[in-house]
Image 1 (cartoon, rainbow, N blue to C red):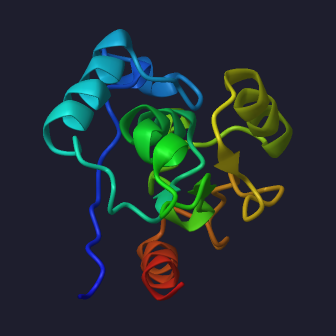
Image 2 (cartoon, rainbow, N blue to C red):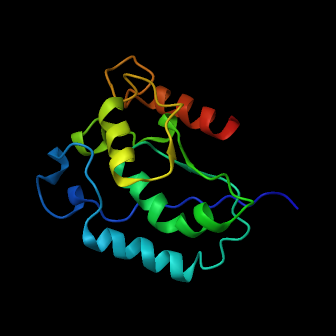
Length: 153
């Protein structure tokens, strides 16, 4: 049987709560966002026995969502890779502060402090620089290239 791929958007982040919040750099989930993850876990993903791999953008809210949503698979499913693999090419496409990730040193500290089981091996320095002409630029050709890489790899 071919693998089944589920694409899940993160829960509500602090950048979603009001006007001007898009200036927040790499925000976490709100309490509502955490509740959204738990509801989705209990309804759509109550049986996590067939989950074998969890990938997420290295943004805090996406890692937090992946952890809250798929914690049972990460802890008890021998079939599942025991870590969330952070994929920089899967990050948000805009260059708004809320869609720009934290520096790698900050991200490593977040993962360590929260005890989220995240593999950051693919997250290199400057993964969060979105200057025009760079790999993570908000330009359509850069977005298309990253999307292709995520699908291929």
